[in-house]
Length: 276
Ligand code: KIV
Image 1 (tube, protein in one colour):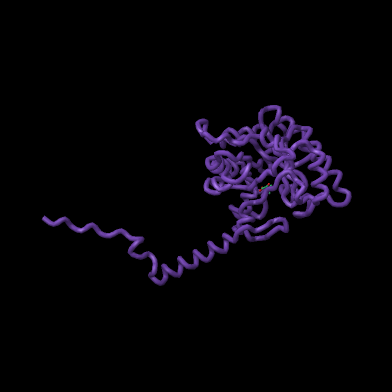
Image 2 (cartoon, rainbow, N blue to C red; image 1 turned 90 degrees about the vertical axis):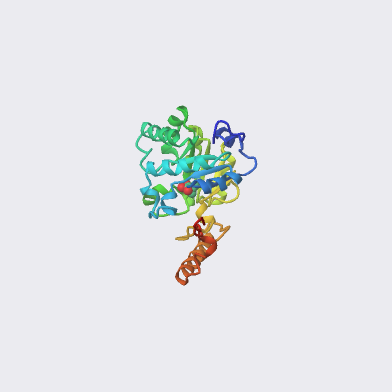
């Protein structure tokens, strides 16, 4: 994004205004080349803390640091001209107090240039979301399954079945009242997601929440078949890039071992000595 760019970048009020309109298209991105691809087709490039699992091989998102989010955030901002980069606040960087959240959210925005952050939590984060939005930090909220709470939730389960449905609805209403410009609904039963979408004036962005949301998000490495450690039911694979890459690497290794690579066209001829 640059001040002289002819393309007007998407900003939080544009996303809020899309409520009930054409579906919002969101993918995660963690690098400049992938951000460029996402930028061409999506409304938002989410620098998710899923980066810890899909890029850094961590067992959960809990080990992701602010420094990691800043590094990947800068890379994604460089790749976006139109799509809005949103950066996840990592575990431990915002839960302690609204002041801690502002200190770290403002660092994420100032050091990366991204115009918004995302944080997990409903009712209990409402005070923090209000504090941030009143001070110039647009917040995308995230309710339902909140992966940073995997240990208190007892796994990556569907959230909002049985007696939990009204709690998820109350969470969504609380973050809307606090000023969030949109909300991710993760692994929420589709009927409940539809009810929440109808009840809120801000867009809902679903992941494993069915079709009745205002938009959809997927982890880019999941839908490209690059991250294959596990595959949640809500992931649709649009490519098998991991398999294609594996075959290419095996072919390269075989060529080096057989001497088929490098060929003359990959090599530089010697300069002939100039005759007197
Ligand atoms: O970290 C992430 O990628 C996310 C999406 C799954 C919404 O939060």
